[in-house]
Amino acid sequence: MRRATLPWALWVFGLSTTLLLVGLWGRAVTVDDDVIARSTEAALSADLVTERVYDWIGSGLIAATGITDAESERVLDEVRSRPAAAGAIDALIDDVVRALIAPPGAETSIDVAAALTPLVPEVVSELGEQGIDVPAGAVEAAVEDLDPVTLDTGEAVSVGVVTDQARGVLTRGVVFAAVMLIVAGSVAVVLAEDRWPMVRSLATRVSFSALSFAALFRIGGWALDPDGGRSPLRRSGSILVGSNLDVFLITAGLAAAVAVTIWLIRRPPSQVSGVDSGTVSTAASMPDPEVGETEDTSTQELVSV
Image (cartoon, rainbow, N blue to C red; front, side):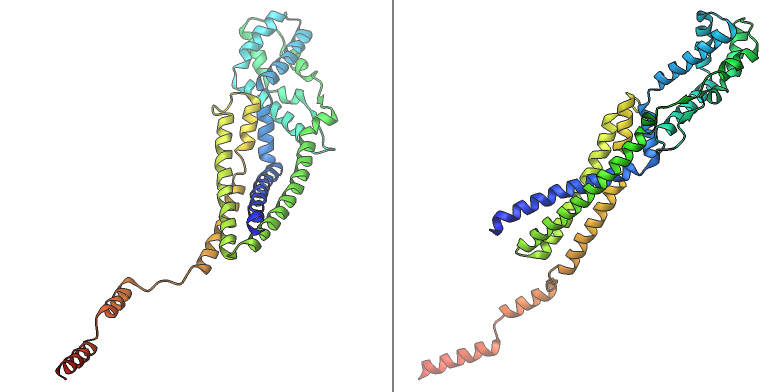
């Protein structure tokens, strides 16, 4: 019965260890706002957002100044490469990310006009360089007329809602896995012939499993996006997978500490030193001269008689 049950208990212990480690890591990710924000920002296509923004600006310029589509496109193509333009787009993307990860009930309106105001001097300057006479006030009016973007409530809080839901599921999963691990480990210890070595073996398994997960997740984070920008979704996944690896390292350290402590407490007593044991062995192997003399004397007397 013991031989049939022990392997199953160890299998359940290994499975629960995997579930517990992954659950702890996942829950740590869901409470890491910085990682979630960076992952969400990476998932956004910067090119798509940039194209949409410049479409808005181009439409506003045409409506406010009366320039042609070709002139508007030519001016905005030159403005794109300027640092101020890149900074304005980055600021707008940050606003979008904050709206996406905002908790329910938070303000989700994005003031596009305020974010793009730094572009006005750049557009006016480029219009002048290309010989297009447009008053600066007209460009300012075109940007100010951009309406705030109010994201749909479900869409705006989707990331925050999903994060909250995932946190709840992972919390329940961690509790369930911990109970499974304790029960399976207890059964394995009870069924073992020598219980303390079994406890040490289980702690060692947890430690090596945690170290393995840390290495795999680190390699996985790099493998998803080795170039740091191959695609938005892969970049986002790379940020998530490569984050919060300290959870595995801390778990591995605690389990290793338990295993080492048990080994130190339960290790067998030290053997006699080599010098002492050699002396004892040599002394034991040497015959007693008195005994030998007595035996020889007795033999000689018996022969004489």
